[in-house]
Length: 407
Image (cartoon, rainbow, N blue to C red):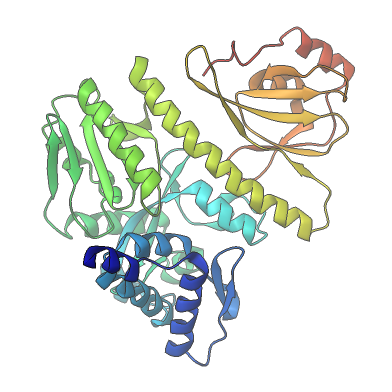
């Protein structure tokens, strides 16, 4: 009975109540500032275009023990009201510089919601690690972490690569190696400082772990670095399972990519056979969610701009024959469309015409410049006109199906 009452009294609040609690604490901490809760987007806006995204903090709040939940809110509030580090001198900032890994499609989403259509290279200072991940440099203080932008590089007279080297050296000396073994040839980081994932950039740490073969890693969020051997199928299977649990249950998901270390560089890698199918399934499940979030943001952005554009859905279907997930997007004749990248394009010439499925590669090859790549990390294509008769004749010769599609 008492256990039930304890759970009932300490159950976490819903999103709206959580937002109101944070809003109240921010106003109490800084009464001179105007804070506004956007319930639809689950964020708080404040002066100068500042935005506080609440989703990840809310996940952390819900997962925390009841007695630690208020601390989650206190940390957020203190970070917002802390003195700005943007104007720090390099001499004062250099010891606080650390590398950070960023999910680039998440940055895209923020840009979409802010109406920013510049290429990513103009919006943020970073170095690509993969198509999905970027490496940034941040000023990490006790209360806040702020990514270094082009203004700081100019003010300090430094290049990004110079700062990145300083940041990696700082992380290298921040604390002693801390990994625990989950099984033969499989290790997980245990630093507890929110910089675990970035430690994959310290390659000697990876080589020192006795994985028993060519090292591969996964970084499902910033607090977790998983390391295994490309030759150890049992370890790889556990690694994928661990990454899945973190990506789907924890806050701040980072990446479902598996990376191998080749000639001093990290490259995306997928194991062969059933393990590869298992990894690709996880990646596709996350990708459909990323596209859904971006579609919602693009719909809102286009509506505000008064543009009549159909943002197509990146859809998934499970193939009965082998349980593989196949993606497709629909392009209808006469509809100005922004088309997400998928395995297949479903072409609709009219209400009575049969749908034609073609591979995305065949469609793009035929469409040419008529399918214009948009400036986002997740591939979107602007298609103003349906394929002409000549192109359609070529595509009809290459018609495929979900059953025949390559997963």
